[in-house]
Amino acid sequence: MPKKIIHYRKDCIGCGNCVEYAPEYWKLDEEDGKANLIEGIEKREVFWRHVNILDEEQNEKAADSCPVNVIQVR
View 1: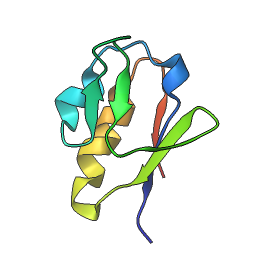
View 2: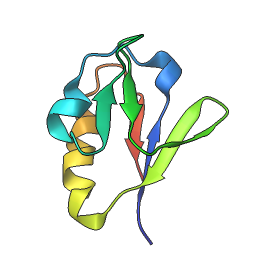
View 3: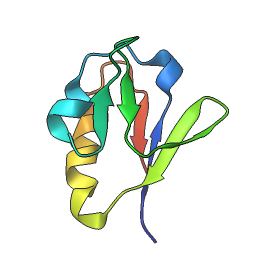
């Protein structure tokens, strides 16, 4: 079963580490400076999407590098 990326966007501080590690999955919003999970599906202010098995490692690094721990890969 593919893993999911979960992003608690409202608590994001926009440091950009996720964009550095996984630019195919993350981009910074031009309006508020927070990270957006590309093609993420929103449910109650939490965004998620499935991650390709080949991209798990780079997204796990993005999650580990997040200073406010708003990204999870599970």
